[in-house]
Length: 407
Image 1 (cartoon, rainbow, N blue to C red):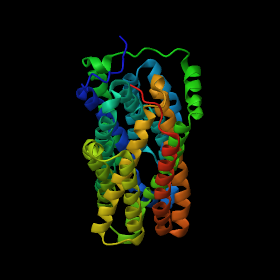
Image 2: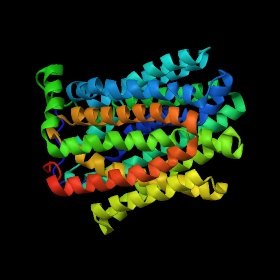
Image 3: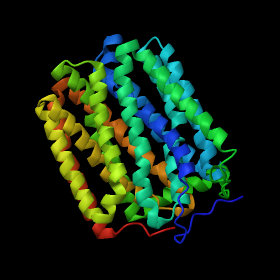
Image 4: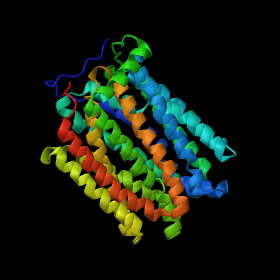
C-alpha cells in the first residue's frame, strides 16, 4: 500500500495519527532540552564550569544534527513512522543508561548515542506531515503540531530543574528516558491498528546514493540556500545565548534548580502559545508581518535578559523569546516542505543538520563567552544579531521568492 499526499480538495486531517506521532515528538523535545537547567548542577557535581558541562548539550546536538542526514533518507525509503518508532525507543534506552555514568565524559558519550537515535524522530514526523497534509492547510497544521514539540521542551526543562532538586541529575535522565521508551512502544502498537500510520510509502529508487544526490541538489535552489543559511544562524544565535540562561539565573538570582527549570520552560510555553494561536494569526496577518513581529520579540527578550530585572519581568521575557522563535521557525519549516516534495525526509534531514550544526557551534562559542565575559555580552549580542537575521531573511525571500508550491 502506497502513501499518496492528500489532495488540496481533501480537507481531512488525520489528527489521531498526528496525536500518536506528537507523543514521540513531545518526548524527543524533552530529551533535547532537559539538560539546559542541569548545567549548573552537573558543573557542581563534576567540579567544572557550566561552559565545560555544556558538552552534554553539544554532543547530543552534533549527533542529532549529523545523523539526520542518514535517518531522513531512511524514512523516505523504509517508512517514516517505523523509523520514528525505532529511534524513539533506542533514544530512550540510551538516555536512561546515562544515569549510570560516573563522569561527565561518560554522560557525553551516552548523550552522543541518544542523539544518533533521536535524530530519527522529529524530522521524519514533520516530513510525514508534508506527505500527508495538503499545502492549503499545511502551515496551520505545522503550527498546531508545534504544541507537541514546544510542550515537550517545557516539560523537559521543568523536569530538569524540579527532579534534579528532588533526586539529583540521575533521576532526570531516568524519567526522560522512560517517557521516550514508552512513546516509542505506543507508536509501534498503534502502527498495527491505525491505517494512516501503517501505510507503507512507495520506496525511492537508488537508496542512499539517490538520497545524497537529492540532498546535494538543494544547494542549486536560491530559496533552499536562503532557508538553510537562515536556520543555521538562527540556531547558533538563539540557542547559543539561551542555553546559558539557566546558569545566568543561578548566578544572578541564586534561585533553586526547580525555579530555574520552571522559568526556562516558559520559553517553550511561549512557543506553545504561538503554536496554539498560529492558525488564527495566519488568517489575520501576512507572513511578512509575523516575521517582523518575531524580530521585535527577540529584541525585547534578550535585552531584558541582559538587564537582569526582577524575576517576574525576566519570566515574561523568556516567554516572549520562545514565542518569537516559534513564529520565525514556523515560517522556515513551511518552506522546507516545498523544497523537494519527492523526498521530504531528505529535505528535513538537511534542514535539521543545518539547525543542529548552528546550535552546536553557537553553544560552543557562547560557552567561551559566558565563562570569560559573563551573560550580558551574550544576550546583548543576540538582541542585535537576531533582528538583523530576520531582516536579511525577509529581504532575501522578497528578492528570490519561496520554493515552488507543492501538494
